[in-house]
Length: 258
Ligand SMILES: Nc1ncnc2c1ncn2[C@@H]1O[C@H](COP(=O)(O)OP(=O)(O)OP(=O)(O)O)[C@@H](O)[C@H]1O
Image 1: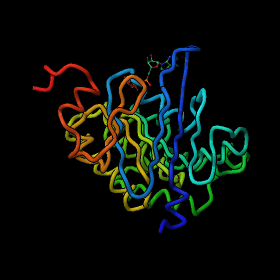
Image 2 (image 1 turned 90 degrees about the vertical axis):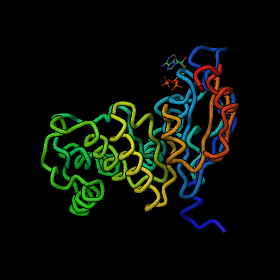
Image 3 (image 1 turned 60 degrees about the vertical axis):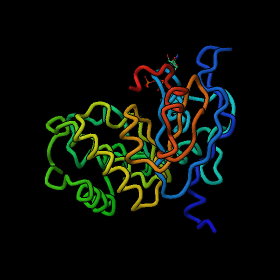
């Protein structure tokens, strides 16, 4: 039986359509459900709508039609205060890290709490002591405690992404989305970041949904692979079920597979 936490942390997408240009859908009726301690990797060629899907889930962009819910909260119909409250529970890790470069590592992590503070506290960046203690704990768990006071712009790419992950966890998210979190990193650091992401999400029972171009990295770290092509889901299964014929369907052609 699903626990309360599991059901609160279930993402349900039904018949999601996104058109940037009327009549030309980028997402053509996507339906999926993600829950539990799972890492789901979305793969697919450039321009197939992977980022659009992630951005619809956290409402950085508005879907054209369809439904997205997390737990019993239906996000697509929300606006204003309700939407802000729901978005706090959707953590996001970005390809280019999206840190405030001139702020310290600690201040960047604390930014994850901004959505929870009254306006005056957010304005003054006056964080409760509990938040500061949590930020230190998170910095410890991503291996950056000794960098708490360093400026974000003095860090390497891998270190910056660790800050991005700690900041997302500061939100106490019900689900974590990562849009190409390793694309700006070298192969070794990419593996370390995927290890970290899957570890922290598994420990905290947060479902992780990650867009990734590197199919092998996706297969290595995900429990489930979703293959998208031309705005549709064309594969949904376990990594070891993903065969060359599926990759051919997802990416087209076959010469590149040799
Ligand atoms: N803001 C926008 N306005 C208009 N068209 C857009 C916008 N954002 C994306 N698109 C178009 O939507 C399609 C899907 O883009 P999207 O970025 O979601 O693909 P993707 O699969 O994430 O690609 P990549 O792997 O290269 O990041 C593309 O044709 C893109 O040009």
